[in-house]
Image (spheres, rainbow, N blue to C red):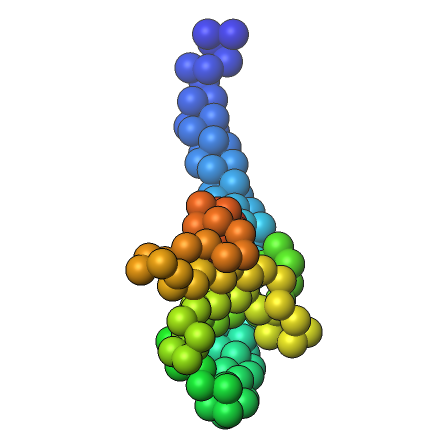
Length: 144
């Protein structure tokens, strides 16, 4: 065995080198290129989500003016797991002293989560759900 290695050390080193080059090329085509395509697709989905969400937000604001709602700027996020666009809308009704936060499926135009608080007896109180439950739901759906 030692004799074989002494006589063929250059061929062994060249063989290992060729193997490493082949491994690197395979890694590039199997891992790197698909990852870049996935990131580009995610970015395209995020842009579409933002555009659809802005249209929905404008419609909600126009409708809400009739009822005395004041809307905060929404947050949009394309959720890969659900394969849909989510928005977090929050509005306040000054006339009735309450605030509503909603997680909205923009593409289905459907509320999938809500938290209401109201000003009662000189303090804000949870009216629908708790603050902790709401934060957990937002964190889960809007994670990266």
